[in-house]
Length: 312
Image 1 (spheres, one colour):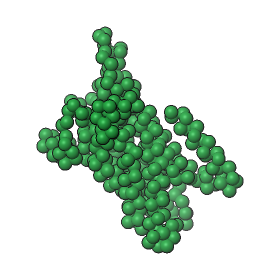
Image 2 (cartoon, one colour):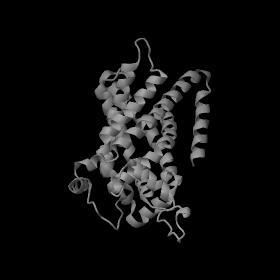
Image 3 (cartoon, one colour):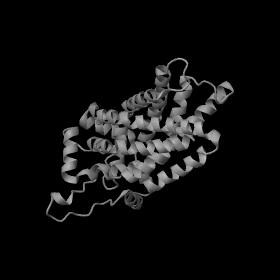
Image 4 (tube, one colour):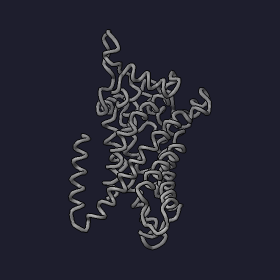
């Protein structure tokens, strides 16, 4: 149930945060934008609303799968750690247990996430002027969609191209995921009144939102490096690896380059992760309530497959 609840929460959150993610990626990878509003205005002027949703299909599917793996791995890893250390999977975990389980969830995400991240970044940074903005013939874009983008990358760069920036993504997701689950657990525990076994709706909203902000605050430097490595196509070869990308980026633009998009990441993280955790907790509580009537599992599986069908 943790896998299914995580998938539904992750997929729904994509619709909330994707436009800001596109703006964030463009600011991180290109130097000609003066700031957030300039990037928004230029994107809308040249590409209209669809410019903010480039690559959203692959991202929604990927986020659903990745969120499923993330929450499922976290719960199972936490149970395994508690059983190993305390003799029972449902024992009260320590802060260290929660952090380690969160890091494990982050590591598990990387294998699934990287190809979709590469496609998303390439699609988001590709320029496709809206027909109403020019009377001249417009050349066809290199990537016609997320799946076509993946095919082109494999053709031109091999399967290794799908895992560009993997080292930066691993560093980002392991550390950010540890902080994410630890801060959510700690905030829920702190904000829940004595005598209640589960956090209330408002507590879940606030804890999820702030957990996302804290995670992205720590993860932004590696997110910048990841995006720059992934947008580097086969004919460019600007970066030789993680350390070289960090060195070159800091040398040319100073330490502030590592925090490009920090504000956007934090602004986007709050509503996105509110949706993730409220949906996740809601699905689990729904199943806990109705499973005694023997209908929750079959109903939820039907809803889940209908949801995946709509996304596809």
